[in-house]
Length: 155
Image 1: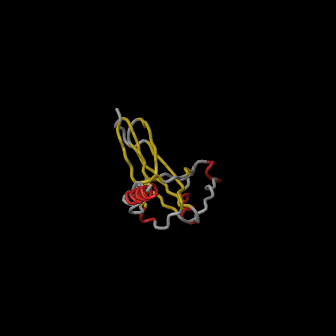
Image 2: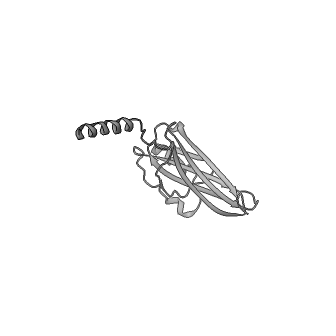
Image 3: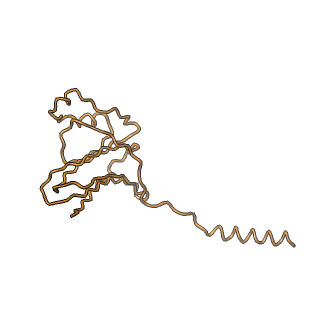
């Protein structure tokens, strides 16, 4: 009799357990990235998606006239493993309070978003340029990479 009760209890538990769905992952996840420093370029308000050494070398096609830049070499990147994302954002404001960036992936659409948040103060004309260069795992379909800038004003 005890064995029958145990078997019935196990059957009931297994039946109810089959109706419980595992927790789904969130639709938007953070992508880990590595910030890299690139110097000696002429800054333009532009977004970059770089997957080859040829595209990478074009960054310095308009080199800064600073004396140090004559011999500057770009950091070495293995483009078989990584995609380089870059963002230059001009910002108004008399004082910059903060600027940060992060990269997310929408799991459902398989799209990637490079986000830059800028907080500024005052109503001066464009005075600051924020630059971020980030290495992410290789992305073959670059049409799914988007760039977004969020600006806020603080008094």
